[in-house]
Length: 187
Image (tube, rainbow, N blue to C red; front, side, top):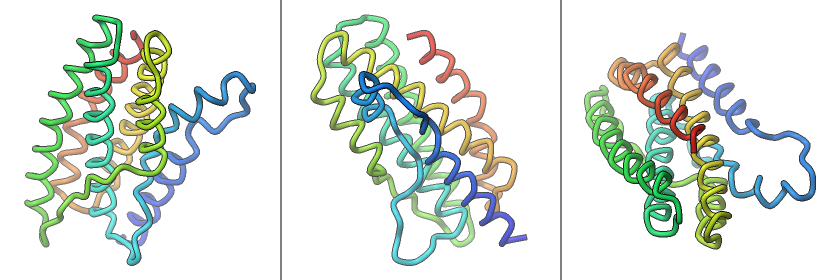
């Protein structure tokens, strides 16, 4: 059972890493670099348990959403984008608190690591260099991509997770993240 859960989480991570990898035109290449927000956690020297890997992925997702939304709150020219960004900061700060509670309830307790993945950091750096309408487009793309990847990870863990408190957390967040994704699609 433990091996099947680890396999399922590994497959989900590989699928998430492959999201959005399609042939693109040269004009879309710069945009693609700014929106590939793979949730595959950085490779550690020792393999993490499926619960730890999920907690780290969820924490990185929250950190990414908060940091990109802080940029949007100051750099965006669109009131709609700014309102969305403020909602994301609040929602993902709340999500982080719930994640920490769920991870602490695990036995043994899990401590989520909120380190951005290399693709998330690249997207954040690319967003920092943009302004105006270019920023707004890139931010909206990153939000759609990031929320879709997060939704996929939450659904996978809620179906096959090995830590009951984290599984409950994932299940609770599926409709919330679905709502965020739908809002991001409207940007």
